[in-house]
Structures are given as structure tokens and as C-alpha cells.
Image (cartoon, rainbow, N blue to C red; front, side, top):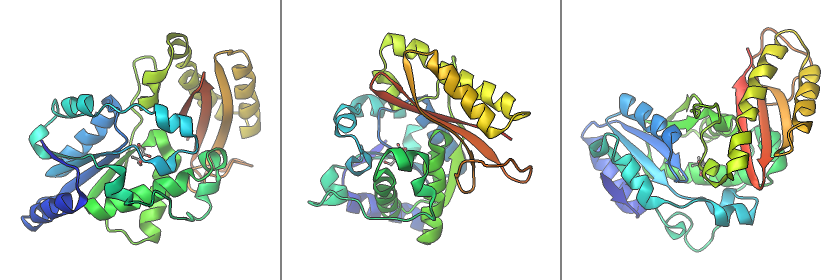
Length: 283
Ligand code: PAF
């Protein structure tokens, strides 16, 4: 498994591979890798000759300094997990902040046709400017044929599709299904920081999403939203930040259901000081 820390060396290496006809998949990550990441890597390996995995905890996308400080950094464990996959076809890029940002760690400002103002954008100020900045830079450095993102961060996925469209970046963006633990909790690097009690309580999030999906078949979005809010009132270990049923194209909350549109339910909760998000397709 080749491992790069320097963007010029990585780009030069990828340039040679592409000149020799190899196709390149890309899985950007912030490390603390788990089976969800491996499923993205495996999708990349099925469709490309080589897969670049970046491991970089991007400071500009954290609105909460404490979350950035406490974000798990487990490079050695990440490398050994990746080496269990098809490691001669994986290239790791684990840069320092300096390699990405030089001496000016700051976001560019983006607009994504309003997608950035909904849900995570409303609750995490500046988050999508940080995500846009790092993903655009990484796509320029790696210049892959295809890039893989999990649907757990569905709003991020839609925003990256918009980023690529608006900035004419020649890459195919591929959304991959949410990978879940056996009890339904969506895989996330933050799960490792849950206390035992919070970890036991957390599958309630997906159970509620599944029940909301059933209710949405016959009830209005408002009724379903009120029901979800009432369910969380009985859950002392999980504090609901938002539950929103939104049109997947605009990410705006549903006012009146239409059979012509596709909807998802999105949820953000706190389990202690750990923020967990999840979502489910409704139709
Ligand atoms: O989804 C993530 O892990 C991050 O937002 C990403 C896409 C790697 C950018 O830092």
C-alpha cells in the first residue's frame, strides 16, 4: 500500500498511473475508519483499477472547537484496517494541514443554490464552506475518475454533487448506502466516543426513522414530525436537535406531499456531547 503525505508527489504518481490507462477511484475520509468506510473503498475497487483514500481531519468544517480536538485520530489503526482490503490497489494520502492549507487555514465561501442553508447548514455555521473547500482541493489534487461518499451524510452528498456541477469538476460522484451496525445504528467515526449507556440508547434513532417511514405512507409530514418529537421526549439519553422531512432535490422541508417528488427524513440528535445524524428514504 503506497502512502503519501505530499500533494505534489501524490499528483505526480497518479498522473503516471492515469497516463498508463489506470482508472482512479477516490474515498475522502477524516480517518477513524470503520466498516462503512471499507464499503466505500470496496465499491471503489469494483469500479476502478486503484483507489485513493485520503485521511485528513479537516479543521475548517468544524463549527465546534471541542469536537475538532476530540475527533478520533487513529492513523496506524486506519492503515492496518486498509491493509486487510486489496491493499496493493490502495493509495493512502494522509497530509498535514500545511500540505492542504499552507499557513492560512481558512474556508473559501460557497453557495450551493440554497442546499447549504438547510439542516446541517442551519445548525453548523460554516460547515459546508469547510466541506466545499476541502473536497474541491482534494478533487483537484487526486483528479479521480470517480469519488465515493456515504448517504449517511446525504446533505453533504447533494452539496458535493452541486459543487462538482457548478465548478465543472470532471469526476463522477457516487453515493453509497448507509452502513449500519447489527442493531441499526448508522456507522460513524463518532460512535467510538459514545458512553456504553448512550451506545445502548442510540439504535432508537434508526428505529424511529423506520417507524416514521411507515407513518409517512398515510400521514402528513407535520403529523409524522410531531410524532417523532413526542417519541424523543421519552428518551432521556437522546436529545433531538431536528427531525425534518425534506425533498431530496432541494432539501427543503415538505409542505404538501407530491407523488412526483422523492423525500427523505433527516435526524440530528445529541447522545451526551456526541452529535449523531442519520436519514432514511421515504418513497
Ligand atoms: O464525510 C467526511 O468524512 C468529510 O466531510 C469529508 C468528505 C472527508 C471532508 O472532510
